[in-house]
Every structure is written in structure tokens, then in C-alpha cells.
Image (cartoon, rainbow, N blue to C red; front, side, top):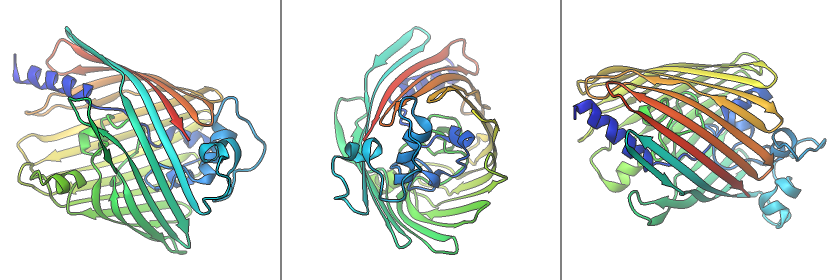
Length: 379
């Protein structure tokens, strides 16, 4: 077996041990939501929905839940969209809670090798408080132990932020540094291949400035949270920057960059990239991102391309098409991915996703084929 075939096989086996939790959905740009903070507590997207976001899940997204009432202001959501269907009423006050469960089915094929699993990808509880410019956020859930059936309690994100009236903000804690388009699939080439996977949060500080037409975010950190906790020798200075310009409600341009210093086990690396989001039709969203990834380990520069085209066939039923590519280096083979999928939002708390990926790996005759089905229960 050649080196590239061995890498390809390792790539396939590693993929089987990963999960695909969903976060933010950039496809909602066609609904004229060009900022993640429209519906999420995190300006970078994903995680707990605000009261406004919960209300919109019924008003704008769900197939069978329709209401003519305006979205609820902060802290006033009730009924089906509320936490536990409004069972607790307003007893929580300004504190927001959410529960996320994601049972799944995954099937992989690579050459003569195949595997199927039924993992519980997410079982998380998130809590947030917002008031007087301050936001406190934390989540805790289960982290599966790769290769075993064991799991442990784990917190991916916990942070505190303050945003002043002039748009200046600062955030500190554990969070995923901002870069490019935060697509829902963490195995997307502009996430996993650039080091923004599901466990790639950092302990650090982020400074931001937001205006009506732009959002600027810069983060600095002594390293990945996992490396700091495990003391695995990969701890190194990290910094990222992202600038978003909104040219109207349906056209977004994003520029990003990151730098990671050399650690005991990894060479220094960095990337620069640009992205364009368009919603040319009322039900159609097209996101495209290109990145140049520089590695100081003899591998040179690789280029990443990701497109995600989403079309709302009928209310609450979205079809997705996502071609992706990553050029090869002397150390890692190139990969081209065809991806198709569907996302269904029948009711406020019930989402279904179905995805099929075909990854063609350079210098191999076989392709990695992945089918994923997920049920997301959000309470």
C-alpha cells in the first residue's frame, strides 16, 4: 500500500469515529438573516437559541407550525417554542435553558470496508443569561470516548461577554474561534481541514465591533482548550480574525485569517480566505468559500473550496448541494467531495437531516461514501 493509500484509509477510519452535530444554518440568509446573532446567543453561530430565535423557528421555519404573531422579545417566548414547551412558564426569568438530543444513523463504505453505527451524537444542556450588555453562556453534555462505548460529562463552550452601546464587545472563556462561514457540518473542508472542528475550541479572548453593515471579530489564545487540558504538547499561540460586510439583507462578503504558532508536536500554520453569501431568490441561498492553507512542515500550501447551495422546496423542507475540494500536498492527498442532503423542520422542536457524501481521494481507486440520518430534538 502506498503512503497516499494508507493516508486515505486512515481518513476513512477516522471519519467513522466522528459525529456531525448541527450548529448554525447559513442557508437562512434567504430569510434575510445575515447575522448568527439574530437567533443565537453566540455571534459566531450555533448553540442555544434566543427567545427571538425560538419564536422564528415556529413563525418562519416549521412546516406545520404557523403563527401570525410577531417574534417574542427577549425572555418572553411561550408555548410550543419555549423551553420544555413552556412547562415552567416565566419562572426562569432572564435565564434561558435548552436541551439538545441527536440520535443518528451513520453508514460508511470505503473499498471493501463498511461500517454502520447508531450513535447518540448530542445530549447537551445549555444555559444563558443576558442583561445590561452582559451575556453568560455555558453548555454541558456527553463526550463519547472514541473506540469505546464509554462517555463522560463535558463542556464544549463556556464564556462571558460584554457589548457596549457603541458596538464594541469583548468575550472571554472557551469558544470556537471565528473564521469563514460557520456551516453546520463540522467535517466540511473549511472547518475540519483548517482546524475548526467540533473540539477545536480555544481558551481565549475575542474583541469585536458590530455596526448595521459590518461585524469585525479578532481572537487571541494561548492554544486549543483540549491541548491545554490534556497537556499534549500541541499548545501554541492562536489568533484569528474575521470581517463581515452586509451589502443588504441577502448579500454578505466575509474575509478571514488565522495564525497558529509552532508547538512541540505541530508546525506553525495559517490561512487566509474569503466567502460570499447570496440569496438571489426568496427560497435559495448560495454560500461559497475559498481558503489558502499554509503549513510550515514541508507540506506547502493547500487550497480549500466549499460551496453550499440550499433551496427551500416547500416551507420547512430544504434540499442541499455541497461540492467541496482540497488540493493535495506532499504529505496529504487531495480530496474532492460531492454532497447532497435534505433538512426537514416539521415542528418547532423536531428537525430531521439526511446527507450523503462521496469523497474521492487522490491516487486511490476507491471513494469514501457516507450516509447520515439524524433526528434533532431541541427542547
